[in-house]
Image 1 (cartoon, one colour):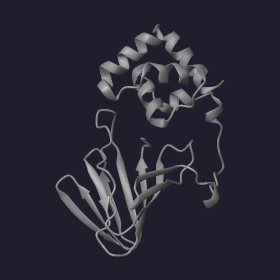
Image 2 (cartoon, one colour):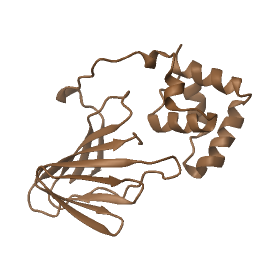
Image 3 (cartoon, rainbow, N blue to C red):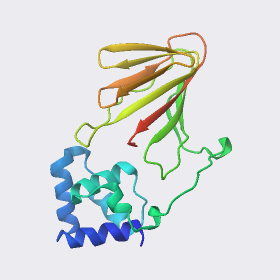
Length: 192
């Protein structure tokens, strides 16, 4: 069974129309709720749902991601995923001085990214949604020095230093040095 078929099956078992499920998501997530068209496309199999979208759908249906994936093609054990450097195609550009490459696969429950910051480069202010659940970030400095601003706090990471934090608190990353800096960031669970 495909994942989108399982979503439709569970929704019908719960006696919900697609519009009723969408209304429930709007009630729970407000303006952060999935758009109706996105929900429709995911359930029809026209679009693969991101983990954040699937999380919303699961909350709306009153089930866990594990329960959703159980018995579907995504439930099959995966031995390993190899992503070669040349295969990294997903990139987020904050500015000409700050860019991030996604280095985790689409099926992982976490998000891994390689953030590069030129001198004076910084990311935009980010905040994972607290109403969905607990989100954490792990940051490992690979090169240079990176300032991590979390709420009113500032942490400076040097090469080989690690920082963990609750990513539902507003945060951003900045390179305040004259040399290029980079770090690995792991977000768990994945939310884009």
